[in-house]
Every structure is written in structure tokens, then in C-alpha cells.
Image (cartoon, rainbow, N blue to C red):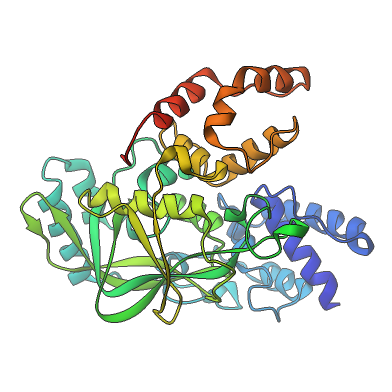
Length: 398
């Protein structure tokens, strides 16, 4: 029945994304485990499911109508390997029949415009030029939390480059619901029952608008990994936009790129969490250092709900302060997962999420002793030193 299909799909997607908090309800527990095991075996045996993040998580019950049995039947019926370039290039939601996924012909004009832009802003990167010319990378425009540190941490790509970019004719807005930036449900609407939801970034077409961000060039394997973090195509879908790069001698000609936009854009609670706003500010400031240390919080209609100004590192909430620390680590933390893990670890020894950063660092030796006695890893010395350095920094800096 429908409830069973929903439970299996939700559980299996959570399993693939490493979400331990997503568990099937009691009546479906055993059947969900058995179904997930069968799906794991199928992913190994079926060529079209043998991809890094697994196409199943991108398409299983995506439209809310395809049942699990129908989906598995479609997969068994598909004898030829699936070509999923159409999904990767953001040309709409995946079709119900996987064998319909056909790679579209590349746009020669778009590819040449991208190559010209990359050569202009990175003239000495011959290997990057070759990748662009061959069409083996996809330009992705990031404007929310996807700054280069977050992408390096998520994609395990320490050498990933970013290029300052502007998207004319759009503005960044916020909507939800989103659970991953609520620190395990501790923030936002429903936080009292540990089911909190917040808002995250999306795009709104607006005449005269500008969305500031970056362009990264990802191969298809890395893009599939990023799809997993973004919840594509159920939470975020992709659109094609024309962006320009900012170089040392001005702006390039526009070229087509892909951008994630939210499927649902309800303004949830007070909007984005402070940690998420720190991530958005970092994305803008990395590419445009002259950008003020604030974020305008618009809803999906373009109405300004509030304006957030970075209060200084010492005055941040604990999750936001941990974000600022983790973004500066080498390698960077996986955001926002690691922030949630650290908050949970601190709570296990009686440290509340409401603690001030200065208080946390004042008592860090005693807190680490408690963590070790409970069999948990202490907060690393280099993390503590970085946090103390930020605490002593008077004004915002990258």
C-alpha cells in the first residue's frame, strides 16, 4: 500500500544519505529492513543503479505516485544502461521510465561561452580549460550555503576551485521546510518536539535583481554526490541560468550554468537558522569581499522579512559559531552534519545548545574530560585553538 511505499522510500533515502534519525515506524520496521536489503542487492546487480550516490535515491517515489513495486519493475525491464546526463544537466525531473533518460546534445555556443569565461578568469589553468572544452564538467552556480569550503568538505575535493559569479535578473530568497540546518530538529518550527524545520535559499526571478555567488565546475560523479546533499529532485530541482564571472579585469560575457532551486518555498518560522546565514554570508564575501556583513532575508515573493547582520563571533549562537570554526578547518567539516554531531556530543555531557561560545571555551578542558570518560572523542586541540582565535577577532573576516 501507499503507506508502506512511503516508509520504504523514506527509510532507504535516509540510509543512503547517512541519516540515522530516519527510521520506519513500528508496523513497517521489519519489512523496511528487508526491502532495503533487496534494494541494495538490486543496486549491485543492475547496471543502471551502479552509480556512486545511486539513482534510486533520486527517483524512488519522486512523484509520490510511482509505487515501489512499479519502480522495481521498471528497473528490471530496462535492459540497456541508463544515460542520466539529462538529469545532471538539470533539464527537468527524471521521467518515470528510466530508459527514457537520453543525453541531450551539448550547446556549442554555451560551451564556447563558458570556455571563454574560464580562460579569461583563469588563464593559466590548462587542465581546467581542457575539461571545459571536452564537456566533462558542468558549471554549477552557488548562491546559498554552497561556498567552496562546504563543497570541498561534502565532495571530498580539497583542490576544488571557485570563481566569483553574478546571476543577473534573480535574487536570493528563502523557503522551506528544511531539517538538515535545524541542528537535528533543535531549531525552527517544531523545535520543542525536536522536529524543527527552517528555511534555506532559493532563487526568484526579479527584474534588475542580482544574486551573488560562485561557479564551480563538477564532473558527473561529483554532481551526483552533490545531488544527494541537496535532496535532488524532491527538495531541490535544477534550472538553467545565464551567469557572468568576475575577473581581475571586469566581468565576462554570460554563459549558461545550472543552479539548484527549492521545490517548496514556504517561509518557515523566522526563516533560515543563524548557522545557515553565516554560510550564505561566507559564500557572498568570498567572491565579493566588499559585500557588507549582512544578509537580506526575503521570502519567495521577494518581500523582506528581516535583515541579519553578523554580530561578531563571540555573539553567535553555538551552532553558528561551530559553523564558523568548521568552515575554517583543514579539511573543512561536512556541513551541516558535523555541526549537529558536535552539538549532540556536547549535549551528552550536559552542555546545552544555548551556551555562549566564550563559556564553552572557558570550560573546554573540563568538557573534554567528561567526553573522554564517556568514551567519546575530545574536541581536538586545533579546533579549540581556532575557536579561541575567532573569539578574539573583533570584526567579521573570512
